[in-house]
Amino acid sequence: MMNEHRGYIMKCIIIGAGGHGRIILEILRLNDIEVAGFIDDSKELYDTAIDGVKVLGNFEKVDGLIKKGVEKGIVAVADGRVRRMLVERSAEKGLTLIGAKHPQCYVSDNARISETAQLCVNCVVNPHAVIGDYTIINSNAVVEHNSNIGKYCHISPSATVLGFATVGDFSQVGAGATVLENRIVGENVFVGAGAVITKDTENNKVYVGIPAKPAEK
Image 1 (cartoon, rainbow, N blue to C red):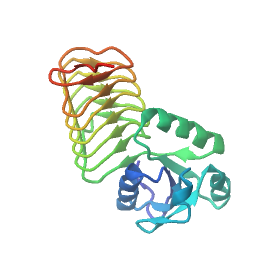
Image 2: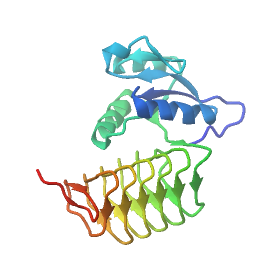
Image 3: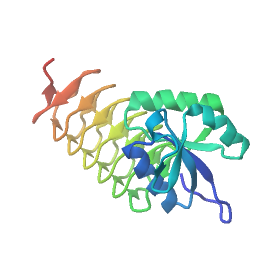
Image 4: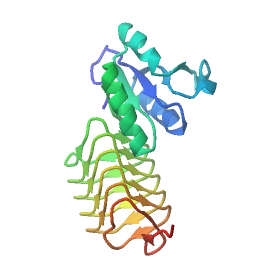
């Protein structure tokens, strides 16, 4: 996740120029990674700058960047399904995708973290936790010991996943929400802000409240 080679400045593009992209920009800079620009489909952002970094355009710009030696990218989009689509498009272009780790997060040496995960400021990942590919552990979130977070998940700011819990692929635990010990959050589940998961969930549903229950349609 880090720019590990002394004397070598890694160059990278950020795919997604929204709010999460700004967070990733800061993390990359703190790790001495040079950001060559943002890639985004929003035409109104083209040729603007975000914190001094230019929004270059859409994916059509990637080929030219690779020819200039910019071969690394990171997908900075909060929604897991959109993130997967952009990961696949990036791979088709030949980009090597990386993760990001804020210097002020705590990760146990005994945790298992994907190289493409994104760990934001003040997050905590405790011993024997597992963080899957392209998953976001956002600011002040806590993933406790022996928990398993799947691929393309998003553990939102100040959310807590307690020991031996599981969060399935493409699921999001909302801001300030809690998944209690040994509970299983299924795949493609959204846990609303502040909710508390006290029982295992079904797949493909939204859960809200304390204790959390499926949201009414």
